[in-house]
Image (tube, rainbow, N blue to C red):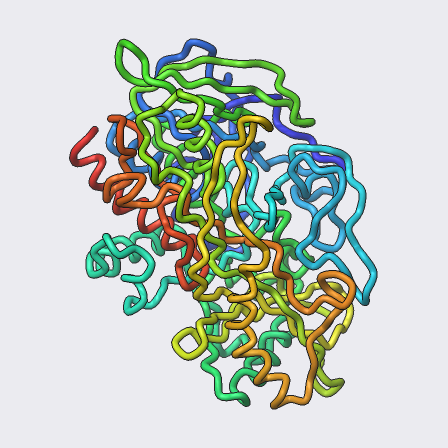
Length: 541
């Protein structure tokens, strides 16, 4: 299968993009195509001068671009991945979980799926090297999964849009006014993201959520709180998928390599509105390599232009009045760590690179009895979780295992209350950034997750699956989907994301959050970005 990308390094603007402002209002309609084909425009030119440059098109960057544009500011966004808007030879934009191809991974020659084995056999496959959608970035001790493309992580996550309990917020962002966040910025983020919830009555009979009902039964029989969780999927579209009246996407194994229909990524929400202002442009297959102060004010930004094999095919130097770092926790932290160490931004403080965590992610599977089938048809979009945070430090998503056959297996992704934090550092000899994470630290998360699953196994007379993550391996302890920290709010920055040492440089993504949000983090990243950009617009623009 092949994916025909947009012309190398092209930029897209608002013309033709989701029919302008009306698109944002229409995201909930059944049958909405996930990606419209935007009009093409020239990529940012060498020597260009722009008022604001945003590095990255994920949650923080999309919020910044929209609010700046609404305030009348012209914004240039730089995105290292592609614009995912063109079907491949199979008629689909994105690959399925069960049949990954070159579209699936960022510059890898072999897939690296979180569930790497099935019935004991390895399932990772050789693929052509390509600027695909999911980056499985490997550091010592951990693989960090990140979205690559216009929309960032919103392209590849399960869409679980969870607002943490207010009672836990002080442990997440202690310098932020919780009352203001819950009165203003969480509601704004949920509205902007198009968050909704599954119809509880429909859930009770939906074939595709049999696995979630089994997860509920086992949780409740062991005395655990089970809860629905909100999501950014179009639930009317999900019902239509189940009924067979629309093209299936979540019910056709699409999730971590993208979703053709139904899921409201940033491309349908914040970015659609930003582009509709006419003040935002996005240069794709462009990667920022350096930011340095200009003698005349503002910043010189160095950019590599890539082809779809990851080769550098051009370099550009542009100037920007202000720069927002929104390349994700890892991307932003790596770049700032490098720029501080190599002398481009030497006045950054010593908090740069610190406070990085994995949101306590750990996975496990359970083998159920034959009388508890989990279904051969499974929606890839999780809709529920088990909350044992207060007693055991764990919140577990009841996750799908969409193989197309009956597995009698329950899969879970746990978020745990681990306090382990790693640090990014510049490795001059290797000319790269290292991360000090240790796999052994995941034992904390395993112990917390076991407070749920040991009890369920004991009650149900079931066992852990040992064939999903390697040979006789119970726990997937080598990954995170939820990287957080590295440029922590009120430490590396002021209390609104302004980097210490430089006027006009900002961090506005998950790098600001020190390692844990107690739930899936993207709503908190979005809400914090809304809060911070309000203050920046009022005082700096």
